[in-house]
Image (cartoon, rainbow, N blue to C red; front, top):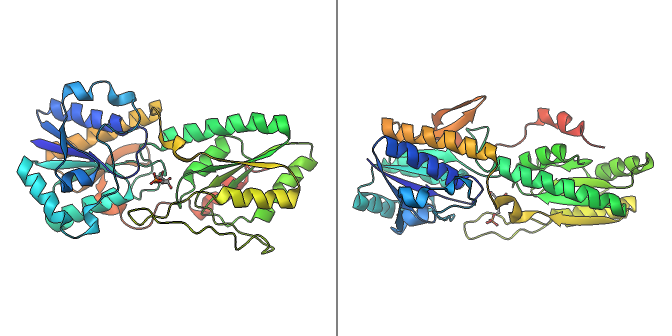
Length: 346
Ligand code: F6P
């Protein structure tokens, strides 16, 4: 078989580890690989690179993606699906392994369902919000970076008696904020899913400092909407520009949180927005392991001709689930977890 492979959407550590794992297993099965560059764009525009033992060797530990990435997508319509099918035919590609998040999987599903393209998906995103899987490649690495950042912010906060507000990525899902906040010992964790007010957050800080603490850490998920019980701090919502693919460019809510907390508590406050630092650099061992398991399974699914599937983490198992499970709303933190998060605050 000739197997195409692409990485779409926002990059993350661990993509190269998936590529490497799919390649090794597919070669073991006697198949040939072809890389498409810049995600679906490479398939639409027929932009390929050969994947050989030479250019795949040693990439497991490297961040980014040797295939490059973009948000271009056949699900955006027009003549894109037709061009995808033409490229696939031109190269004699028998199956496509699609590594991506929600948008990229939407493309995979559209092409599979409506055009019969034989696809297998592998989930990645630092947001960990793809429905159908409990874990995505990249999340663990981003979490490690955010946690380390909090460890560093804690010591400088202590030296200056400051409140540090640290904003992490994650879009509408608070997984990164929640686990980084807990692991990094944050005193307040503001999640997009949880309507916690800045007054409540400030009360926690004031109480702590009343008990003899002189510094505090606040973690904010970038998708948090500022809530204010007094109404004093509302109307500070940010107008987010849309990116080229129609997604809001999040980032910046931490400035509003910091201003409100400083005004209410009177404590000196500073802001750190971690941004794309969370997506760069080498993957953690855990992400390499997850990527390897997903890649191995994806290659086997292709070999067996079991298409329209996603390599997924379900409970303790890595298994195939129908790609349809990736449809629908982002996988966010359920309400019954809020009490758990609260128990770590203060
Ligand atoms: O979906 C991954 C993610 O890193 C989000 O956490 C973040 O909001 C977004 O992508 C940033 O996108 P871009 O790289 O286009 O700025």
